[in-house]
Length: 329
Image 1 (cartoon, rainbow, N blue to C red):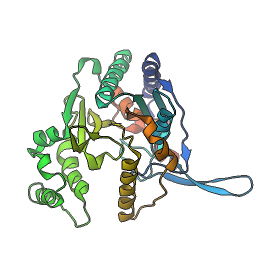
Image 2 (cartoon, rainbow, N blue to C red; image 1 turned 90 degrees about the vertical axis):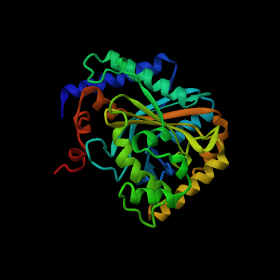
Image 3 (cartoon, rainbow, N blue to C red; image 1 turned 30 degrees about the vertical axis):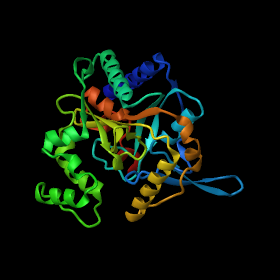
Image 4 (cartoon, helix red, strand yellow; image 1 turned 60 degrees about the vertical axis):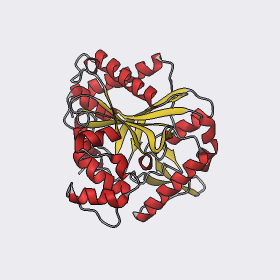
């Protein structure tokens, strides 16, 4: 436990709120315990049971993100909103950059796209850094880079990814023969993609300057709109800085039929991987079209504190580590 870094953490959180409040965003406190969490195939909620006083019980989960609730608020007529609070993910590595309970900042805007998200994110980070005099990462003096997924593959591994879109066998051959990766028959296109991306591309992102990676293959953006000029791509963006992935955002999909198809695909993938499944959130789907043209992004506050304070581990910037909380003996 580093008390100086914990004090800096408190100041960073205050500065984040100040930036949003001064720009007419409204802070929302959405539910942390819900019956139907997100369907993401690679995220695992914590499940529990809620008991009424008459003995009846209901299965519920701690949220991995406030996304569904925030979009329902947009559909109800809210405009510029943010949520800053704890979220929970099971089966995460305890590796110094993850914690099963973490602080997530998530904000949404109507009539916006990923360009707006990138500008918001860059401006917010520069504001926080400028006003945190002891910051280890002076964002105000850095240019933020914008790089498409296609450009990243071209620059870092000299591959034209568009030639391999929707061709699982060609990508598998590339992974095995050029990158010496093991590919099994159970691996789908995205599995093979990540065997290359996670080893040869992601570790190089954001090391020299903060980098927005955007325009993802549509299969990797289940809640994002397809790109207007080419439906093989989706309007998703992530931010990398200092060796950390800090944020993940979308120009939000508001087509309920398309969203239902994607949720069902995710359920199928969870079943394939022998993971728990649950019903679709019909309330969420029913109001989705009323959300309109909106964009939102999730930002990891603990990792930002690591970056701004020069911490080597998330355990230095949280009051009690996962080991201390969960392994008290």
